[in-house]
Amino acid sequence: MRILHHWPLDPWSRQVRLALAEKKLDFETEYQRFWDAPDDLLALNPTGLPPVLVEETEKGRTALCESRAILEYLEETHPEPPLLPGGSADRAEARRLAAWFDVKFSAEVNAYLLHEKLEKRVQSLGAPDMEAIRIGRDALRWHLDYMCGLLDQRDGLAGPRYTLADLVAAAHLSCVDYLGDVPWDDFPAAKAWYQRIKCRPAFRAILADRLPGCPPVDGYQDLDF
Amino acid sequence: MRILHHWPLDPWSRQVRLALAEKKLDFETEYQRFWDAPDDLLALNPTGLPPVLVEETEKGRTALCESRAILEYLEETHPEPPLLPGGSADRAEARRLAAWFDVKFSAEVNAYLLHEKLEKRVQSLGAPDMEAIRIGRDALRWHLDYMCGLLDQRDGLAGPRYTLADLVAAAHLSCVDYLGDVPWDDFPAAKAWYQRIKCRPAFRAILADRLPGCPPVDGYQDLDF
Image 1 (tube, each protein chain N blue to C red):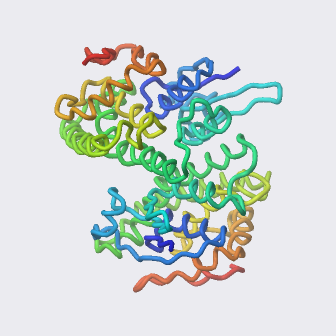
Image 2: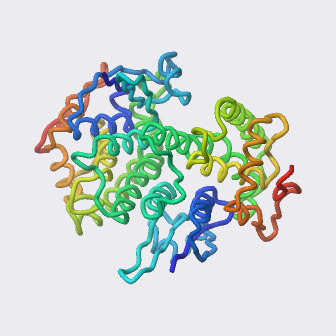
């Protein structure tokens, strides 16, 4: 049995859901309001953050924490279909871009947009700060421009095939897209890339997410947007 | 030829120096004042941050960015001596702890102590904020306590052997130690762990670091401190 402790609009939880679905691995989910510091989540992960993947086998129970550690674990234990390219330099490029979105995109875009528009709402932290939202939207345009530069040369962010880089980027961007903040039409190469990703069967559950009291914008789930 | 673009007191640069030394790989270094946004560094890494490892072989030139991507690359291309354990669950634990220090320790300790006491000085950003230093020092005690909890059960942070977890933790802690901010005597298990790490030949170059105009505190380089 495999249980993923997650929050649906947490980009790191989404990465693990996507990887499990790409690799066609069955799992159950446990919804975690992590900002309430639930005891069961803290017992599994001392940071108190999702995602945590609990695997129970005959050999015992393993709790895996931190999205990148979980993704590497899944790649090692279930190599097909691969989410990392074959060559070491190509793998480094996919991991570089995964870090780009986990660190830079997250700090410059989601720390503003997700925090102001979503986290403040569900965690009752007060009204959104419009100046912070403007900063996040400006940074998002810069990131989309960077993505278009990569996608002019290749179909995936890190190379010709879908890799961890695309999965991690899509996990972060899909949360902003839930809020309707991505100016896709101004960035055609990024839009075409996201259309291809939305069509992947592994992405269906992400597009079906509906947060109670905070529905997605129109078009979030549409394959043709 | 192999060139590491680094800044000596950057914890992520230190991780790559340590991994290269553990694996006994020769390299030259290029000192990067990354806050001045040097053109050569920006051309190699669009984030403008060290470390960047440039490898030149007969097949061409590869620029590797982001410490975790570089460490995984080195582990794949030069597996001996290994910095990750053999089993996938054990590898996940080492990677979880590496993420702990790269994300949580960095945000809760080094973002205060290194920033206030070192980065502000070398980047001429004004006087240190004593309240921020107090917050960083309090968080550091909490992290040392967590480390002692792990080290009560095992010699390395992630298991019986030295792994990526120890290397990443030591890279971050050694920067705070350069400033003399680690209350080692209050945390004997962490102190004994750091003593073992200081004795590793791969750590010698780290202990020899001397930043112009900002020397380390007494005891930084001593194996018996």
